[in-house]
Structure formats: C-alpha cells, structure tokens
Length: 419
Image (cartoon, rainbow, N blue to C red; front, side):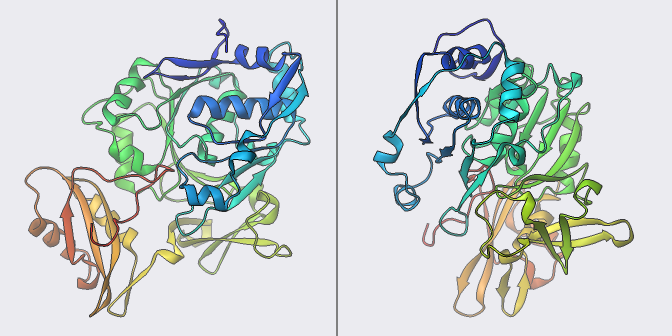
C-alpha cells in the first residue's frame, strides 16, 4: 500500500505502520480487486483495511479473532480453505472520503459478522448491518480534529465502534492495543490523543500516578462494570474530558451511556429497552442477526441484573451478570461485588474474585489483589470485615503484580486449578 499525504486513518506507533484514507480509495480504484469475504486479521491495520473495503464494495465480511484457539476456529468454520477464498470484483472510483461516507450509509448488501468473547462457552456469531453498527456514531465539527486511541481487540465489536466513529469524522486512530501500559501513557501525550475508549480493566492497568492529560476531551468505559472509585481516578487524570460509561454488547452495539455508574433508558429507546423484574431486556429490532435462541421472541434477555437507583426517575445500576453468582456454604455471593469493595481501598489498584471448588462448602471465594507495597493479607481481611459478611470474605487472598486480561480486554478468568 502506497502512503499518500491524505489524513491517516490508523497508525501503530510502535512500528510506525499506517493506513491513510487515500490508501483505501486508491486500493478500491484498481481495475480488478481480489476480495476476501472471511479474514483472520493479524493486527488492527488489517481489520481497518478489510472493513473499509467491505463497506465500500457493499460486500459481507466475517472477522475471526486471531486469538481464538485452533479448536475454536475449526468449530466456527474458519478453515484454511475459507480464509484463502477470494472473489474477483471490478474496482470502483470514489473521488473523496465524503462520497465514500455516502456510499457506506447506503450499503444494502454489506454485513459484518463478529463473534462474542466466548467467556462462557464457544463464541457465537452475530451479524450486523451498517445501521446497527453505526447507530451510536456521533458526527459534527467538534469531532473533526479528534484523535482516537484504539485499546480494544480490533476483531471485536467495541473496536469496530471506534473505527467507525473515526471513519465518519475522517479522524485518526492510534492503535494502542497490546502495548505495554507505560508506553501507552507516553503515547497518549506524544500522539495527541483526544479520545480514549477502553474497558475498566484496561484503565486500571495504566500507571497514571499523578499525571494529568489536559488534551484528552473524551474518555469512555465499556465491556465491564465500572465502579465509582475508578471513575474518580479517571476524572483526576483527565480533568478536561467528558467521562462516559457505556453499556454495549456484541449483540446490540452501544445502547446506554452515563456520566457515572447510574443509567437511564433514553427516550429514543423507551419502547425497545426495558427492565423486566431485575433483568435488562432489549427488543429484537436493536440486535444483529444471531443472538435470539427463539426466532419468534420479541425480547432478548441480556443476562444483566440491575437495581433501581431512583425508581421514580427510571435510574438504575447494572449489578452483574446473573450467571456469575456463586454459592458459598448456602449463601449466594456476587464475586464482582467483593472485587469492587477491594478496589475501594486506597492502596489497592485492582482485584479479581472468583470461586474455587470446596469439599466442605461446595465453593469458596479466592481473590488476587494488586496492592501497594506494605499492604498484606491480614490488613486486607480486616478491611473487608468492616463491610462484608464472613461468607463474602475470600478464604484465599493472593497478592500479585498484575492481573491478566482476556482477548477482549476484560478482567481475565481465574487461573486453572493447580496453577
């Protein structure tokens, strides 16, 4: 791909590789194109290249996460033959990016198939049209000079949302996915990043210290529950940024937004998002193709349990995924609640809590904690006992230097038994 003076669409600072909007237009203008309808991209630049071509050519595209295991890829149909398949298409001449935007908005055959994270089993496919993918994209003069940090796995929905947000505003993306946290902090300044979107776990890994990033105007969190302590920390580091907590999923894209941890259903979605009992449900019209097990069902149960913050005003908090509760000696315990209490301690940077099998109690809680030097297990137990019942205090507490993240940037699963 020949680089041009056109605005950069995406750049990887550690390698200085980039893709410009001009590169995409020039590639589309070739007399004959070899188009790959199924891709297992090696990096974010390959994702942007494949997505840009698919949208412009109005063709379907399936993205397979390169971090899928071999057995997952095989089960999902990503055979060598499928990934090697090519279609020969006539090239198209598009004079400039604005015309490309119009062409993409009018696409009728474009479909993007993505896969869920597979945290509770084999990943499931979800197929979106451009209208469901770009539903939350904001455009306007205030965003014309935005520079986006891409911190998500590029083959998943959250990254696609960032890529499209930049695309429709002709912005630049700085690809920071998988880079060492200390280098990310430096890159935010060096690359002039104005907008960052990432998981809460990603932000907790950043060594922000007392740093203040005045250039950043927007910070969004998504993919996991964001606790109030983390949001306060981000407000200190990014004092001029609007901090938004986003509720989104692979199945529906971005749906809800909040300045903190309290959400409300916007008027535009009042008849398509609802709380039934304690569960958040989404109308099928907001979903991509795939997530409904019952094709005749009108509503999709997200599995997210909520609590009312102010019932009369429709404000609520998202507590947890229903399936994440564990039974400790007959007491139902939410590990996420315990982890949130741990993170409130001023000397604890991050924590994860999970269940372990127990021959006596059925299950017990274990915790891994990233803490400042000098804070020990005894002090942690004493702190937890101030707010939690004995059954909610982890039996096993291990101090660690860092917590691993999943391939989608969320807090990692517990280590396998015996490790």
